[in-house]
Amino acid sequence: MKKKKLPMKWKRKIGCLILLVPGAIVLATLGILVFMLANSASVFTTLKEAPSHLIEMEFPEENIPLYKDAAEAYGIPWTLLAAHHRIETRFSTMDPLLSPVGAEGHLQFMPCTFVGWRHPTCSGKGQGEISEEDKTNLEVIAYYGGYGVDGNGDGIADPYNLTDALYSAANYLSLNGAADGDLERAIFQYNHSEEYVADVLHYYHLYEEDYN
Image (cartoon, rainbow, N blue to C red; front, side, top):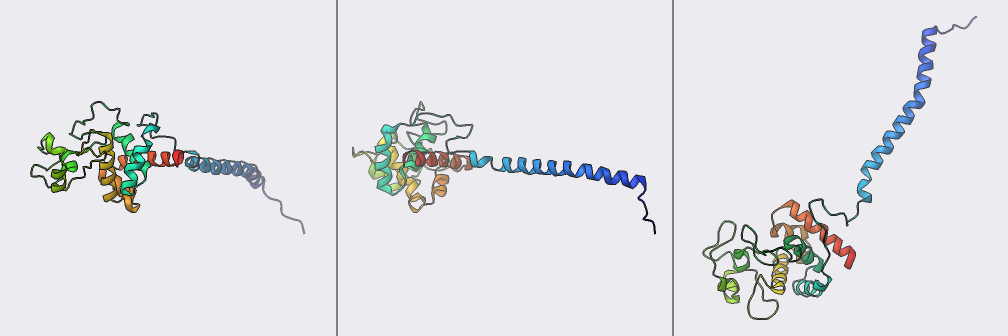
């Protein structure tokens, strides 16, 4: 019995398929490689690559003892405190140390946060109508439940004094979760912005990598 021959058109189709298979395998392989490279990009992204909206600047290593003393007093990482200082006032290079909404000093405290929200003039964003004398008065701050701290022992809590500002910020971060390891919550309480949290954490991890 003679074997039936395939029609010519089927032979052509089979030939085309045979030619196409290697090409399809190559394309599929290339596609997989491209996908893997795209998704592994984050592996090659180091902590030193700052978000594009942040300007890189030299870290003031002379401040490390201040950061460490304030952070140790409140049980938080000193690198977290340094990161806040970087984000808030670019290590105190911002001039003036007063924001358009009224945040004051090296670590940008709203007056009502520094003196205490129980102050009768405090509402809204926290500017309040607090006298300059009361803003630094330890008894007033204690009475109204503020976060201001006399870090340098001169009898006042001054947000425009770097040591006082760092101790006050450490106090705030500690009481809002940082002392318990909940850094994200503490940072968010400091400034209710997810971008702010990401920026502070970026520098926190960077300083942990560089200095610890």
